[in-house]
Length: 337
Image 1: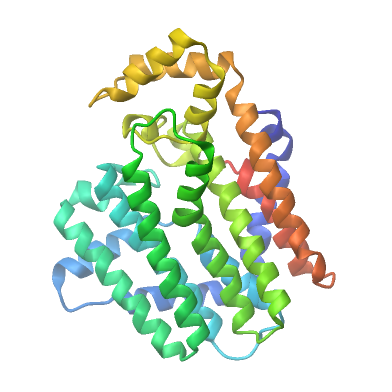
Image 2: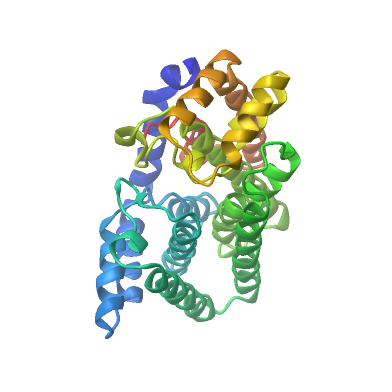
């Protein structure tokens, strides 16, 4: 936890520095998102408007805009269109995710499926994806279309893989990494690579930004999963233990299972076999996590991906944009919002 305390101010600054550096483009991206979600169907309009008002960090859109700026893109609005597209893919996956997990809180507010119903939420998610494909076609670049359509497919496969392993406390760490690579890191990688593609840079620079985004995404998801056992609603925007109550097996539980003794393993298995887990169950897990210092181990593993992401930017010449993206790797680990 010391890592979080030491880096908190510096890290949050890096996120806002990225926002500030592409502020004009981000405003246009928000406008593009709103225009693309407009509909004559009243329920679609209400639900998409509610979703927009829940906010969000817009981190994936920022990555596309930041990567494009790093690579020298300055003319035209393709970066705005694709940043909006990437963000809408993310939004669609969240809507589907909340239905699968029976989620009730997202970004500190009730989820769409909680306010309306599962059927409507799935259809709105589909609506967002259909808009995304319209935007890909509008861009007219086959490489972009291939990348983002492939990314959407991989995200869906990641969701299925996670569902397949739900409740398996003895899940291999390798399986967990496959899940978060597909569910989270693929879109981060696509967001940064898209910025390079529209800038028409060399393949090595495209690959470097894709590698950067993928490792940033892995760091982000490991931090997200760890915060679930080490945060609160005000700081994090979701209930403490949400993953636990939904039966998701994430890195803290995987590492815990590797460290605990036989009797503790029996307890862990018993708890996750329950259809419904309660606060007392969660408190028992928290005691074990603290006993074996699991949070620290999670952050140590995330640090490996921070280093990979940061090092991938060395091929780019020194610039303000490069430094911001480099420092953003630490934000993904130690963010407090």
